Length: 190
Image (tube, rainbow, N blue to C red):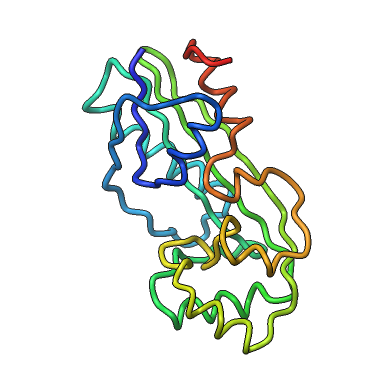
């Protein structure tokens, strides 16, 4: 059974390799990831995962298509994928000294079946950050393209006081949920 990963994330490929899964193809979809007014973080993560799976499955009807979307949320507010330093600083000031959630929607399109979905959720408590710490992290550059502006698998981990839930979820793919989805579709996984 062919498996297609609907993502350009090298971190998702690395995470899948940890559970012995190597996709036959990587095919990042081109979808609109904007947040509609009023959409809640859980809904947003699941909707985008499903849309990504559907977009790629449309041209690969005989393959399993795995897609995911990770959202960092403070309350009902969804933080952006950070591409510039001003946005990074705004996100880091908002996260400083607070708890936030990282939600990853995972969707699997299987030939002849409805799309299966799972949601990973991790709670993170960030330490209070000084201006000097934010300056230092801004110089790191690892934050580019990251939801909420930090990478738990990088230097950003030093700012985390507590994590409750799946580490792999924060990196971009909750492995327990992903494994269950693949097994439920008959994908050969231990």
